[in-house]
Length: 73
Image 1: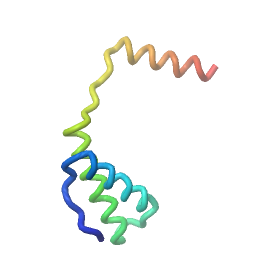
Image 2: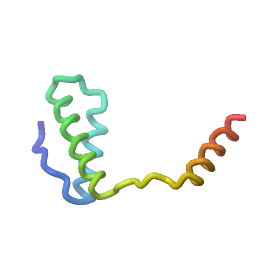
Image 3: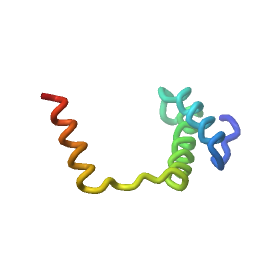
């Protein structure tokens, strides 16, 4: 396992996402699997604090849903 540290800025975030890509098929319980789990938790925490997603207003949500339905027809 590499030296895993808290994600404090966009550079750390990008590096963590890149590392996650390398381990997407890691087996649970292996060193790679444990690193993947840890990195995923760190990324989630960073994104929750720095890139929060607001809920859409009801009209925007309805318009989006209608667009999805229309594209299937």
